[in-house]
Image 1 (cartoon, helix red, strand yellow):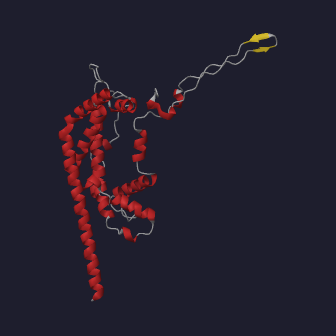
Image 2 (image 1 turned 180 degrees about the vertical axis):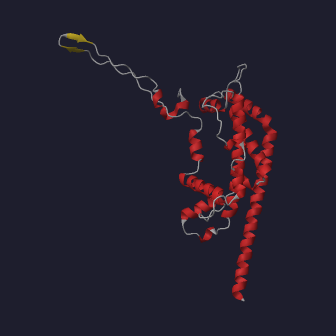
Length: 284
């Protein structure tokens, strides 16, 4: 059984080096024994298994990231995706978001590493998430609407067509600003609880210290069905306390999905109308 499953392939285990034979030089006896290499070379450990692989797989590729960065810059500065030469600050709605909260201000910052209060850090992170979602939601909603103006079927360049499809996808940004904020808050809350909740191992009293990452390691190797059952049920029991938050997330997800379907239907109706009008115009 792998004693260090979290370290993965970055772990290097080497057997003890055999002693080298003794050497004699110029009549003086000199013993030369090689130092055994450490069983674990910690300097070879690059990352721990905290979901790094999954996160990398879920990230968009470099091309999409570059496209989004370019579109964000163009949208904030010109208000247009197509006209690169539009006057600066032509998008007042997007520009109004810039500097709209203290998160844009870098004046009077404390020295690096000087703030040690965890409650202050937690409050800052929560505000950061709210601000980032506000800006991103507005941007995604506006750019997806603009991107839908273009006829993807008329585009021959495969990369350009893929980029347009990527930008056209609105996601949960189809929700209103207040609903999107509630959706993001519920999602963040559930993710935080799933990662931070602690449970006790079988037949062990509190304090409970096992977290989700510990359970994943145990589930890969444990053969005791009763222990596995105890851990899994205990974990789900703790998560069930967030049932109202989960129900809210499902409600908003369904609402966003309906809005996206309505949006797609409206676009399809408009396409059909333009097609019929074109045919009628050519006939008469």
